[in-house]
Structure formats: structure tokens, C-alpha cells
Image 1 (spheres, rainbow, N blue to C red):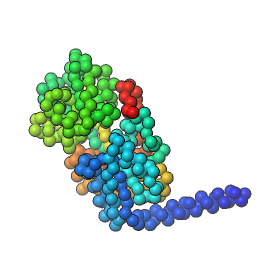
Image 2: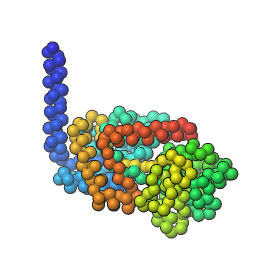
Image 3: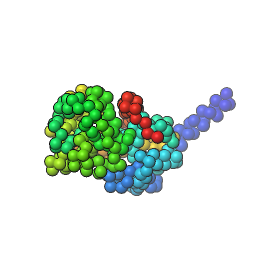
Image 4: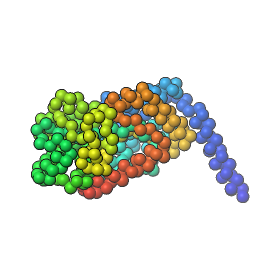
Length: 322
């Protein structure tokens, strides 16, 4: 009986302490790790959110760019950080859902070692081709690929990248055979697609749309289930010939796993408010990102579903990164 009373008292004390911390949070500068260099699209959205959080709380939310090893460096830093609410992670689907599906070993488990806070945005990708490719639609592309197995190629930013998995998912759903040409980054990949050395590539809206407008590339389809506000005239892959196809990249916020639930809830409330505000939502849409904030539980389920999709794709395509 004494042990039961002691345990119960300890539990109430922990709850009270957690509530007290949440009520005073934040009382100092917050660090938000971004596992990409400054200036890229992930960094841009992270800074937009961080600036608004800082205004709301009267405390600076400092972006800490920690690129390296495909995002592993930045993620591991937060996994091992103090779970006090002052160490946050602004992560991508590539590091949270694809990396666990394709890497032979990671120094952490994203589902056990991190606490989801909120999905922030999804980023529909756009499939583009060199203007000389004799296919202007998904159905024409499938027919062309089936008539020339292995002769059409596509670019990605590297093995196991979202662009790689996205096309492999399309191949898995259609049975076409097209050849992967990996690059070390988006810029050299896009340069070769524009030059006609490579036929196809999935990439992000902000990167692609100016090149489509300049007639240097042609848009085939958008990867999300709904047409993008940034490219309303471009059909989705699903409506254009591969029903059920859906592939997006995304950004979300997480914290070390042991971070108090009250603090997670407080951050979530603010992120949902900030990302849903009309001015912010309009700005994100112009950048090709679609606001998708939700509860921590919704984000956790979304991450798990994404992981399962990419795990099955990786197994089917025999993709494994050491």
C-alpha cells in the first residue's frame, strides 16, 4: 500500500511539474534544427514559422542549420538533445519516412526517439520532361516507356532520395521500365534534363515552374492527389493515367521523445494557428507548399503511412542505402 501511495504521489508530482513547465514555456531562446543548408526551401519555410513563433512568445526561435549525411546529422542532434521544449526539429519526409525505409541502419528510430508536433506543409512535386520527349501526358509516357523498355531515363538527386522513390513508385504501379540516373544535387540534375541528356525528373514547384514558363521544360503531371494552386492547369498523375498515385514531400516539426506532452500541445496549438492564418497560407501556396497542420497524433499516423508506402516501394525496387 505504501509503495502504491508513493508511486501515485510521484505520478501526480510529475504531472504537476509538466503543467507548471508548460505554463511558463517558453522562458528563453528556442533552438530549431533544420537538416539542410540556409537558403533552400526547407530553410525558408522553417524561418517563416520560427519568426511567427518568436513574435507570439516574445522569445527568439533560432534556426540552427545542420546539414550532412542526408539529414542524419541534424536529426541525431535533436534525438540526443534535452527534451525540455527548447530543442526542436524541422524535418522533411525524406529524413522521417524515406530514410528509415531505405537505409540499412540509422543511429536512431524516428518512431521511438522523436515526438511529432505537427505536420506543417506538403509539397506536391511536378514531373517534367525535356521538350523533345515525344510524350506530353502520363498515358503517352507509359505507352512510350513500354515501347522502349529501359531506353528512357530519369534523374534524381541521389539513390534513396524522394525523387528516386517517387519514380520507382510510378514504375511499380505501371510496370514500366525506365532507367535511374542519380546526381549529387538538384542543380546538376536539372541542368542535364534541360540539356536533353536525361528525359525526366520529379522536382519541387518553386524550382520547376520558372523553367516551364521559359519553355526549357514541359510539365507532364503533378504528384499529389489534387491539382496544385501553383500549377492549376497541370493534371495530377492520378487523374492523368495512374489512379491512386500520390507522392509528396513534406515538412513537419518534432521534438525529442521525452518532451512533456503539455509543451508539445502548446507548440502544436501555435503552429496550427500560424500556418492556418490566411496571410501565411497564401504565402506558402505561392511558394508551391500547401499548409497541412494537424494534431500530433494525426502527424504520427501520417508519418507511419508514408513510411509503409516507401518501405514497400524500396522492397519492390530493391533499394537499400548503406
